[in-house]
Length: 223
Ligand code: CTP
Ligand code: CA
Image 1 (spheres, protein in one colour):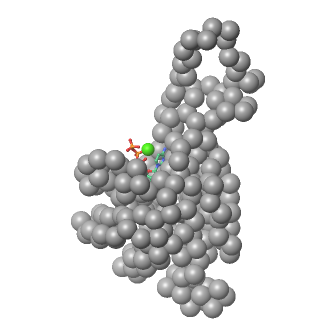
Image 2: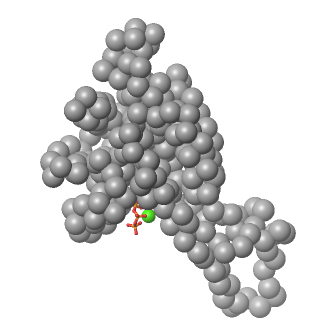
Image 3: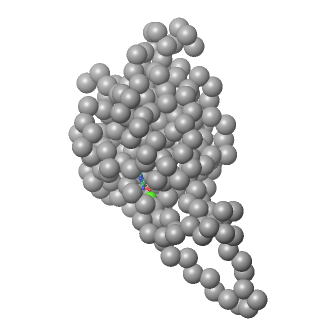
């Protein structure tokens, strides 16, 4: 490890990686969440650590275990992750990898007390939701760091991924099938760069895939 830090392809580079889903509170005991385990982000953090990087890992709601040898910062909700990420970027960052599955909507208000059910058995409860801040889009004016996003799609993967790459001002986007990637131990992805390049990675363990992705991203820092 110590050797890697001095001699790896990412030696001396500061990486921020976000991982896991987010929890958006409904009341003191309930939240809206998603199936992200954090496994992909954690595998990327471990691979970046092994390549010699100084890794800060911003962790949302994750069931997997974060790797040793990386700094852990916990941020449960989309808003908390937004604030934590801006804080960490201001401390200096060469590359951001946004692997977290950030909630798109949160409850408009969080109830102070536990919401009680009604006596009426067929009562339909409605929750009003509002959009969260798009964290990557909020970093559009932050230049001088490489920004890599993830795109989780169930259909029209390439078109949607390309649109996100442009809209969020990214250097590259990792596109994957949301149905098979979330919560699984393996993954298959396609990476699109802002220069129109494309790389396909076949289905394999997230740990193996992460090493290949980190090798690819290391090249972005040199060019
Ligand atoms: N992302 C973000 N902030 C959000 C939502 C998403 O920074 N509030 C990031 C994700 O971490 C990911 C990228 O944006 O790196 C794409 O996320 P994705 O959910 O695929 O796209 P969205 O822009 O949220 O669009 P949609 O969910 O409608 O496909
Ligand atoms: Ca989304």
